[in-house]
Length: 471
Image (tube, rainbow, N blue to C red; front, side, top):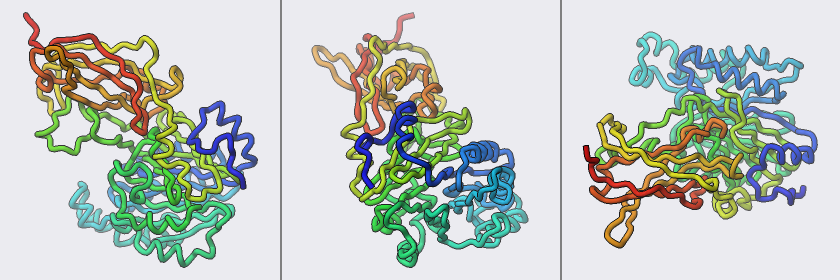
């Protein structure tokens, strides 16, 4: 099979170009819905899972992959709500036209706690924890709810394509995966892809090295022997608007995001910080991403795989489709390094302004602060051809005849994890006067940044004084 010269090395195509290009791919061989991290606490938490299943049903999928963390408190009743929802959309694992839809589910770390661990973390009675804990009864509960035998690692065939699922065992990774792959090697294809899924990301693959919750690397070592394997994993809740959620090295690795909420990378003014609170006093609250319920639709063709990135609150496509060229020979076509060199750089639309306001506000710890807030427009693909992933804001101080950068912050726009029509509001970033040099003139530079850290041209505010305003 020849790689398509028209898209070799490309990660995605915009919607009209994709629609035209996909016509050349031939008939789909396979369609799979992909989800993860549903975290069901109460029955109502199945609302968007059901919505996603109905979307997949309408797209005539052949299976649905769920990469763990289904029952948030590891209770059988929570897993049953999930199973009941599945069978309400796919009764007897059948689509409306009667074709079989395969269950490709695994346990995550939230699914397999014992009674003691449940009681330590969640407000349930000892009697309920003892009766419903999935951990000691993994095989029993699985067979009861999903009507199939449970095994720590299993393989299924879906329309001639192999899927291998590894249930969560420890945070180090899946026990005995290398041995299992060796034992089934003669059943694995060499002329087309096969698919593997586990809960935690294989170390140093998708979203790495920045994301939390990777395994210890033994999965990466095991999968690296098979360039035609495509791995799916969850746990980190990393949003699908981030181009680093797909990776290629010795094999292909794709993050599955989350159907409960997404977690942006930390270190930004409006995300989590790793530093002690006494070191960093963010001037913004952590952003609320509860409406970030992401999933994917995978379509497999002879020479390509497409991944539609979708969210299920507003029922929109998140960004352009990812395309994986087949066959993959381990050349790192979609590696971070290769894509970083060619990824388009975002720029502000001509005439964009940075404006400043000064007022009393509250920092993350609700401390009253005299703040200067920087305001600027979001950078969107529909106006500039490239959407910004985040922004850098630098405060520059005038010091006699020199100019010095005195503070640098990074910030996400309010809707960066959604479709860009939910990201049209101005972006803000507050600075406390206490963070800046007193009684000096300062100005602020703002640069849009893509997913790989490349910065566009800066726009700059007018000067403002940090001196206390006269009454």
